Image (cartoon, rainbow, N blue to C red; front, side):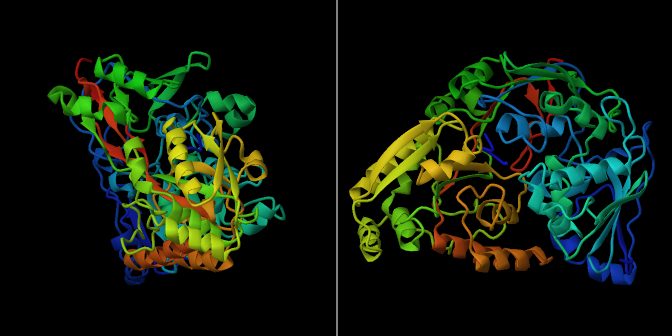
Length: 562
């Protein structure tokens, strides 16, 4: 997600209760076989006051904390939007789980676990998922949650009126195409036969479904509040999460949320009384605030101070560089000649020296996929820095005197300007003149202008769904919601569609490796790599855990001086 600054009859059923992770390798791949044997996993008992077994609380370790106090999280984004479908930045998207929860939840390792669903039954043919909701779930405004809320929320996320970046994730749900096309009033494959039962019927098996339902844009929403608040919902999140909005100061770039006393896991979590989210805080200021204890967590400490941190044992103990799904590339405008010629696009990839970007906080892998993503292969055909090969490809394409107009979006980091300047030097060395234009917005803010005004622009995408299908669905798939240059290759589309139905994880990895190799060869982007995170926490913040898909878990952090 990212610089968005972003899914018959039951025969041979397998049931899964809220508790352990739903492992794609052992559970999804073997579901049909287990189902045929009639194997059932029953929920455990021994409920706490709320009827919730603490062993069924999803997510990383949380036990042993102390209640009270407040935590302060600082971010660089210049604006935020807390409608889950419109949260394209870091400060909003990676804070959605504080306010919203869904049927499943992504734990460490991005494995889906049951959350507001206490059980799911999957038919032997992998086409019908029957969810049973936990009892006693309340929205922040006090109304009980029912299955119809989930049905409406999923339908809203898929709606053509929303045109959300997650719309395509539900393409395997029965009736998706008709609903998106506007020829059906309802998403036929999602039904709520009673208040605690939600049924999702697929037209083809989709190994991603449980993970998709765990990302924040599919967290349950109260229809009446969304409709009553209208645009104000973007600054007034109302959900079922551990924290409830207390105040929102748009001018001051600050919001405060308090513990939701009717949270489904209230006997155990969250620990903090309040969390404060500040945005529009520069990376340098984030470092100063966290290092001196005026804030508790920054996920974007500037690379310029890493050496200073390493020289201070106390700071170094609070510093980490966790893995990231923050993918970096520069989109080439394939609709403008000569960039419709693959040889020109390959020449641009050969022309640039990616290694120089490491000084600006980039891991320049030259891949489309992050190294931790399913399908990443060291053997993929990445582009070596080869100016002679770049010149030869341009000559082969008959291109001389080319001038590129490049849009540089600085919303994610000012380092993009320096990276663009390096690229301009490399391109000019092979005979391509470059004109740079800085924009303070993200690419998504000016999407309508990009194709018209630029030949190339930078993109940063923090993957919300830790699966390569997200990139295929949104960025290089035909008609993808974030495919801003309009790239299209039916052969790659077909490979991506086939990969959705592969339930064996190893086989899926091989399929997506083939897809990445094909996209690299086609070169619709100038491939860069990922931007690792530089994280610094205060001395008082305890139990810091992180996952590339969710980033932070404020429901289970606590402070030592509470």
